[in-house]
Image 1: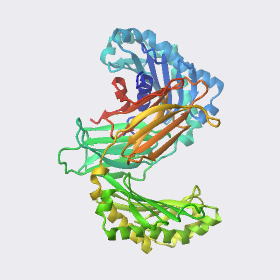
Image 2 (image 1 turned 180 degrees about the vertical axis):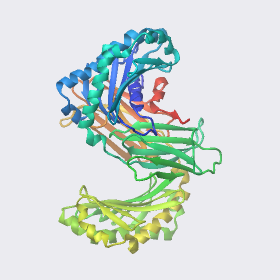
Image 3 (image 1 turned 90 degrees about the vertical axis):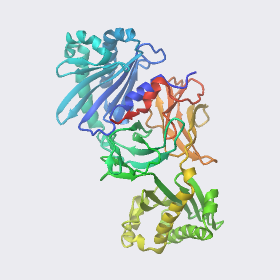
Length: 581
């Protein structure tokens, strides 16, 4: 059985191409991405994905014979008549495409035709467009204003026919034009809150070791972000790199986006590379220079859980655990041999000052509020990051689901959310940088980060490529039948994984779990519940810095488990490896 899914790759490719990386949204748009299968029996005759700006709102294929809403506000806000009219769009595409293009496609050995129909709004001006592509053989682009179409490549064979036709006079085209604008207006009104949300990205730069076929490179990973319009580029010694690196943009499972920029390094490369990111959610540009690293201490303060130590702490250097402490054993334990060998007795004495400082700092200031609110534990993290020669230190404390306290060591001030806003008056009177324990945490964290990076360079820069397996989980007394996508082992931890259902991204309704393995790699599981007699095609899609392309593993509702395999042929388009020119 094949380990790739043609439907998944083609529809996912179409969906991924809805915006071009780096472009800026000038207007709103409603776009229908469609795929017409000519002689691929395993694919529906017509498949269609509807996108309102950067959100998927509906799906159709000729097997299910209905348009499915993908947002609750679309489902609630559109009437039965609206849905009847929505179905006219794939019906019109189905009626329009085969008579005019299939003979040429068959003659040229084309197995599928894909394209898009859509409309845009800028102020009070609306424009409608139609674009059809036949694999790599050319495109047909139609202008609804003039009623004429132009072609490129082999599709120029149909030019004589097209010059005799005014597409605006074709009833199906006229219907597509009017209904698209109608649904765009309605969708913008219904979905305003979700369409206008802003999700700010985080940026991480990783070094990728050379392989037998590729040289050493840097990978800039930007995620999560929304809307999709983003400007990201590499700078080399402060100058924009205009070509020679690869850009990948993929949707995340939670209606945000993931982006990777990979630039290959020269032998003994001493240039300074900076990943420069601008997004509408950010007050200014994010700039991450060279490889970014972090040392983070995750801690748990048990207030009234007797079976847990009073203070527990785990130290992580990038994605590797390097030490552990709890108040029962009263010592910091090294978790890597090179940490044990490379740190002196004095270093370990200083390391113990970190949990001691947390223990001294937390209870007097937070425990009274926690007891009052019935909070059983407080957790958080203290850490520092390095980007080139710039270091930043941070502190974050969370009280279950009641709020967070986030401190900036540069300004010496903290902000709070939720119930923790009760301590705001106290915080405004305090400069945390003046607290001896905080000052000690700041300086020691940076010191240990530098030393750890020097000692652990080889292990920190390794790449472990994941394998992917899709398994069916039988129903239980409390849960229905489901599919489980297991991704393991992989390192580093940064990864993009999502479910596709009949080729479209499933943006919600499944569980994601990431856990460390015993061997310093990671394990990830995505579980999606199946409906009764579910015949949909589910595909687990995985992108990781260790892989030359995406992994795509299919599991059918009524089928059996699948093993992993790299994408071949058409699957290569899925990764959207767009060369910057």
